[in-house]
Amino acid sequence: MNISDLGKKYKLDGKVDVWKCHNNWILTHDAITKIAHMENIKLSRVDSIFQSETSCRFLITMVKEDKDGNVIDSITSVGEADTNNSFLSYLGCIAEKRGIDRCVLKLINAY
Image (cartoon, rainbow, N blue to C red):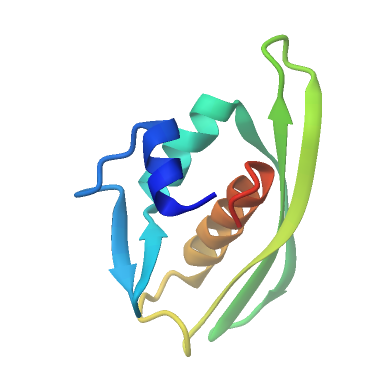
């Protein structure tokens, strides 16, 4: 699924929901949150893999539910952040966000 298809399917605003980085289109975390809500994707579990003052790794599990709340799919992925790939000081929050975003994109076959 390309960025145009995602934009149409999930009614994303090209001015606020996407940005370009190194010639690649990137969805914002807010856009991915919209998609998760529309697809009934929820955070199931967060496990710490590693944390230090300069690095943070989480194992994130997300589930996709049907309209009755039954789990129809799940995925687990790593969310990571360290001082080499983030200029922000709250690495745990960045790692969690990255893991959630990866899981949502994988659950909609757009990763």
